[in-house]
Image (cartoon, rainbow, N blue to C red; front, side, top):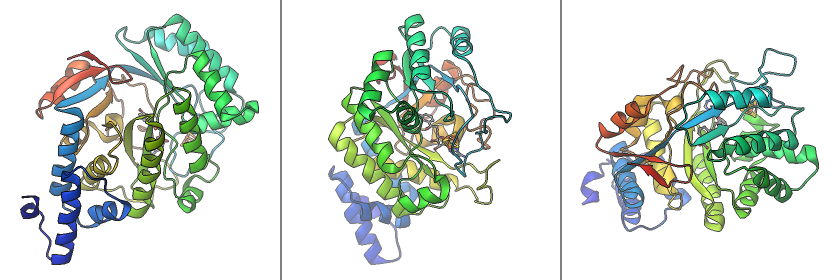
Length: 370
Ligand code: V47
Ligand code: SF4
């Protein structure tokens, strides 16, 4: 049946694509070469059908969302990632919120939020005890809020500054009230590319070791890839393979979030952004490849609402949160949503308009409201 849907002028490639499609339909894991062949030769429609079948098996007709607030403590950062449109150096015109100011932002937020998502620049003077205090104060005042905070790159800096091991850092942050960590900072794991686009950042091994230690300490996380810049399909496949291997070991990842490179206001502005077809293909192929990841998330403040809606037919089952204009990372890089905000009603309508069932979840994918 799938064979009839695979159209390719070269019979050998058609046979190869049929072989990969049958693997997917038989719930067999695809390998790196299969993944590259899908990127290079498969039609969007075919990868969409395959990804849709996996999404359906894993998450039925549900599309998850949560209600969260993004806190960005500072955009001052010691790193110089070439794709970053957001960071400033100390003494420049960056922002630095105090713990009290961040608590005030939570106080002002909608009372129905269930999560605070805290991520920002790697500030040279703020250490693990500063951030541990922030978390403790949030947990004490708002014990019902799930705290998803700090990328592995931020944690790497915190533990090095404190002279403690990853495991000690993970245990300390958990004791202070950290519940999970977001997936940022992964970028692209290939050594040469990482050197080229974010040379000072934690290495792939460090990123993976931090997630592994956190998973072992009972702190789940997400994972990302930054795609659509100077990487090729092999780089993407190998990146996902490293994540899949770690997930086989720990089962600590909840969601994979493909992040499309946006080119405004950064030093990689000469790179043309990839097409929407490429975005959808990338969602679908990540859903197919990452067979041990429960969820694929489309981060709508970056993609825009329409692409996020379309992605629901290409393997995505999670829409992130109903945030209210509280993130600057993407608007500065030229994202589709310059002042991202979406009400619960709007989110539900977007999801239902394409035949899915909107489900409000908590940060660990327990159902709150249907
Ligand atoms: O690591 C920075 C990316 C990430 C650009 O875990 C850019 O639920 C595109 O990881 N174009 C941080 N992307 C954000 C992040 C995230 C977002 C939403 C949800 C979750 C989650 C995690 O933002 C960085 C980097 O990969 N980024 N600059 C840019 N110009
Ligand atoms: Fe700093 Fe993150 Fe920007 Fe890199 S992407 S410069 S780590 S804020």
